[in-house]
Image 1 (tube, rainbow, N blue to C red):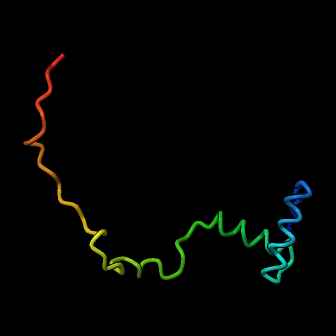
Image 2 (image 1 turned 120 degrees about the horizontal axis):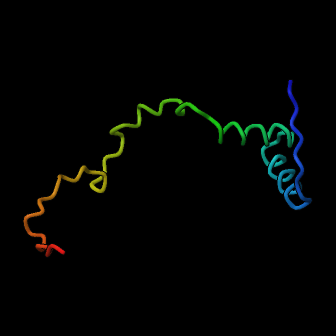
Image 3 (image 1 turned 135 degrees about the vertical axis):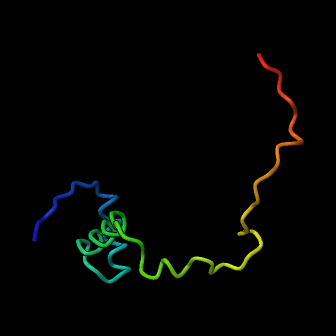
Length: 76
């Protein structure tokens, strides 16, 4: 398996250690999981099933507006 070396400051390293500990994984596994989330090229599983799943008035399609009431602009 390929390896990657990273140089981080002590504060960052301590934050990585704490975050990995909270998820009960090694720092290496924690970092790989985060990298994979960032560089993912496919949609999340079941993403397509979300279409139309929100029933909320604020998510309605606005109809094209007429510009008849707009102010006439002068040509320059």
